[in-house]
Length: 128
Image (cartoon, rainbow, N blue to C red; front, side, top):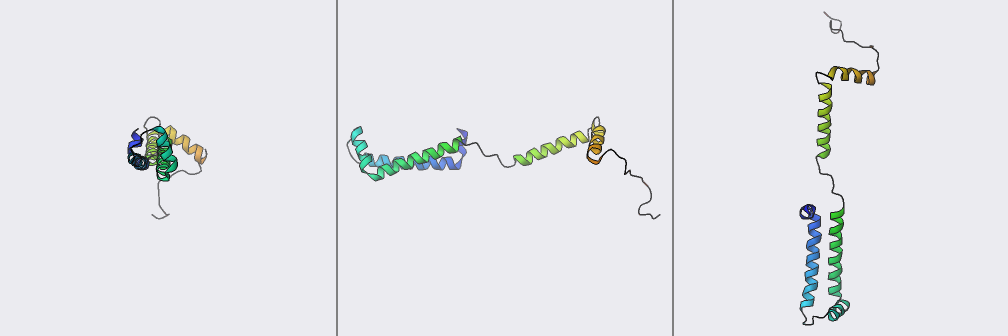
């Protein structure tokens, strides 16, 4: 119900259906005959009434289809998920208890187990 109230497209379909139904009802209120047979005859004879009823039915079907369709993902959720995942990864890497082992495991897994490169502080660029 919340979606039906907030979705612009659903609201537009419902308003169009209401307008078409009102137009058809206005045609019925023009005459004084109130029987079902007379009403069915008027629908069959007058194309305006039939067209308005068809339009109302089509608009209601479109509104129902829109409501039953899964809601589109809200904008910003992908960014929020990425931000949350980044926070979790940083927390795991920089946790004082598990961080050093985790960083070592990732380093060995991604770059291999060799000690081909080690940082040695000292002279930069060979100059003193």
